[in-house]
Length: 366
Image (cartoon, rainbow, N blue to C red; front, side, top):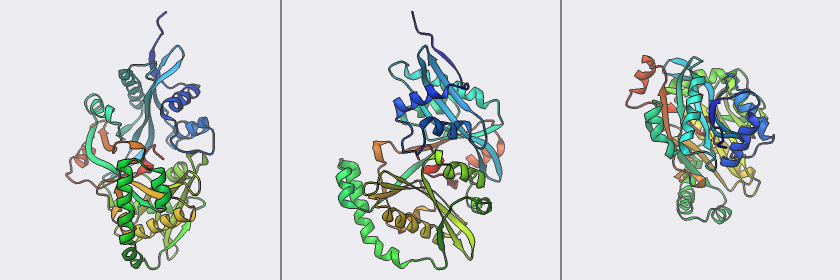
């Protein structure tokens, strides 16, 4: 008898089959978590601050074979704030589903999104999904790749563990450039800026976001609620948050994640935000991140950040060099959708040069 294959939206109780598929196909999540995979799923999809469950599925008689999801959040575009989604965890089981079946799951997700006042979508699509997203679902490729910046801290261990050609060569260039530039970097120290690790995120982070967001045309809302959900809930993973202060007031923050074990670990700068016109604050936070990585015996530290972002200068000043992405992935490029054709969003997307704040923490890669 031919297997029955059907597409539909998420229903309570699907999560076990979903996690099995994600783990089997993607090795999900792609990082260590201190809780069960089901608990991580509930944090991400069932208990996000907005509360919408935006998941499209395809099932056969044995369970889920295709999955496409969106994480709801708020985003500031120009002077307006809108509900949006980040498209994540798109996958199918090649042993039980043809690749085109994934579009049935995406369509089911789109039907769910239509029930809510969601005006904006963004995604960093995998290469084989890009053309279909542009054609079938109205996304626009902004031509802004997410660059990887790397600083090698322990060259012996790093090159031993990353022996493959292109990454090894780019990492070596990063290491040499870092060593050549560190003396000048040390001379440029910021005065009067203190760094502390945050045990919790208070309302001062909302105030910081409101001020810092003025420097950007598009930025995910990073208020107290979002930051506590994204980085302080243990189900999300193990993150550390550095707060930059001057005269007792928060003027910036950086979110760090340590992957692996001491002596072989890698540190990631997942997110960073500073007051406008304060490059010295960004520089202080990057140097603080490097110190954290060194204290935890990391062999390298990296940061994923959009091309042309103003914080790149702080990374380069601390010895980071643009490098190939780990795990041989292609450089992800930002695509967006003005779902309801709002003229104010359309006007912003038509600008020749948009100031967009996107970092790795705005994706599902950390």
